Image 1: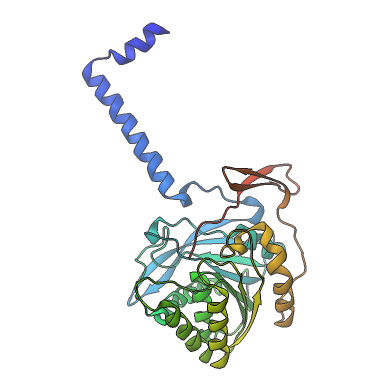
Image 2: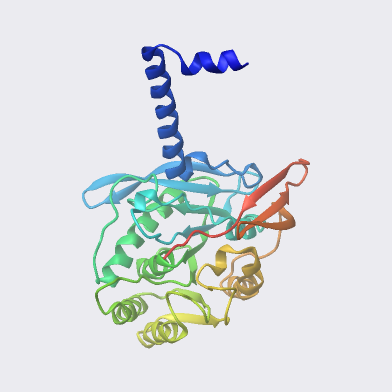
Length: 336
């Protein structure tokens, strides 16, 4: 064994150079995979997960949006949830593909199809994210156009129920979902807003955010349910109340669930399994009021145990009727 090891390190220079090149290529490949989590994420067969590239408008041209779809067993038609992601710091193309497994699981087991589009310029979607500076109103409206693109795609699918549609979003996606309310689409029954907003440095961003919600409220007739926690690191209770007041004063229809503190930061509450006890009971009432289903028809994954590793929450799930176990890291990405 010693001679074998020595033979590697005493190899002729050309051989050593080739070996070095191979190692360098492997390291680059590993780095590339690490920087694009969507490439390495295993698909969740229990939720019939698939990832598609769907067309979207970008001015006078077209882009393609990386889109995750979860569906219950069967052919449908299924009521629809279009769930909209937040914005992580840095380059939007470096953001991982959003899946919202906690939310998706709750809806799929109640018979919904869940569609999560990565809007223009995010993750593997083509095009570039449009930066509007402190024009928060325009930012939300631009993002809402991509939600419309995702809905247009869904409405062409035989498995989609065109008369039972719910729009939801977290953080930047919550802002975008509320902005989508200005689109008056038949079949869309309501909006869920999980800590929706957008924070921009070097300007009076809070005032701009309140103004944006006032505009959306003046141009929307959809009922909406909002969730904001007391220790949200981005949008504090005072700001949430101001946004709600502006929205409702302008004519919008919304109810705010101010649920108090959640762990160390309530901003990503909806991505935590522990958050379901906060948002689902109120959501169930809301869905019932707007005529959308709430009954469990197909249990998806059942949580069996929890552990932690390096401060991250790891859950072990048993996939029904398969005997297989799946370990999931449910610690939310930092999305704003």
